[in-house]
Amino acid sequence: MQTIFSSMPTVKSEMHYAQNSSANLDVAISTERLNLNGVSKADARELLEKLYSSPIVTEKYATGEVKDMEWVDKRVSIWTSRLASGDPFSCYVVRTKQGELVGLVILGHGDNPGQSELAYIFNNSFWNKGYGTEAVGAVVNQLAPYLKALGHEIDGEKFKEILATARPDNPGSFRILEKLGFSFNKTEERHDAPRLFYSHNVEKSPDLPTGLPWTQGLATPGGLSVKQIAFK
Image (cartoon, rainbow, N blue to C red; front, side):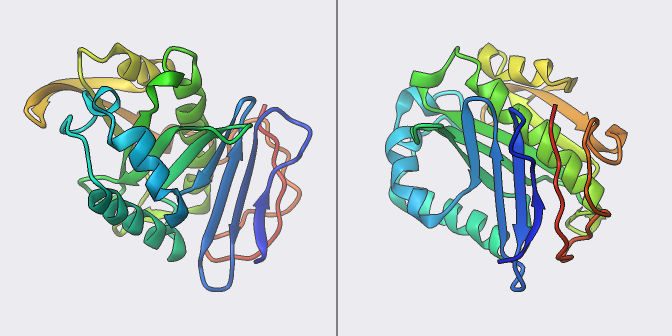
């Protein structure tokens, strides 16, 4: 594998973004307490056991229903196929530095070209400790601006917007979005429950995240040059 992006090791937050000649993406983000990596098929069983089979965890996520192994395998297959084809709009597994599963952050495809839909789900043992904001912030403030800078497209249009929803009775979820600067748009029913709709305009992000010392010119999707970047 040839690295096209690797962050400097002396800062609290680092990102590694690599693509081999077959287009397969290897994405990893390291924050002060967490590691985020592109999902793999080996994660599926643990995702079921610690996230999707828990009524507490899934109560206010999507339909609110617990899932089975077949459902998880299908979702993981979709996400891993995207990464394997060079599509970074996928799912990222969040773990502590000790390897404990914290949850998932999904920067997926939205309903319209150019839009990504953001979703996240966390094991309840990590709630109310700031892990959600730290993990989602890494994707929104580090990965997303980099994808915009690379000129990535979603369904034929340049990546321009992130959409997200949260239930009004789930403040732990919508406060993450508000802390990260998402704009509230409307309240509308979804999955048989009222939802708060938020958006984040990626086009207003700088061409590159601020405060980043680049060692080489900007890569393009499919390019194979080496870079270093430091997130402040």
